[in-house]
Length: 168
Image (cartoon, rainbow, N blue to C red; front, side, top):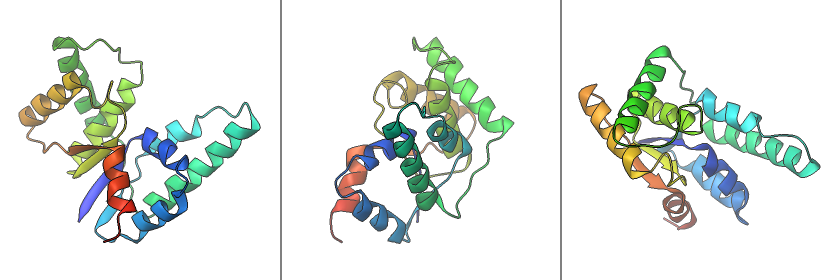
């Protein structure tokens, strides 16, 4: 069984697919593929501004998709996860990483820390700048080795589409 987390951007990308309902149903039907709910991801989706009718509708659609895909599979945030994420960040900065903690990198590092702490298999993301950046990947590997944690595999959004658009 593959236990996975989707970065927030994956949900937004899925919503834009013309066959989103088909892909969503394939993900839900795949018993060997479990998408987990992590409160920080849902919070990011909830924080989408409701300034326009279109953004309000997108927010509602994204929350619905998120809840359907993660139904019954919850991971809790903890001080331990936050501590691991801060270690990632410290090492990231020591390696020359340029983003500050108060940018989106904080959430990215929290997602990876959650996946590592809970022994998840894969994190899907379309974020090549921060979460999947070379310096960040080195930081995860270094800290997880030091903390005796298994790093998840990192796959991009296209890998997810290829998996669920292809008939088995």
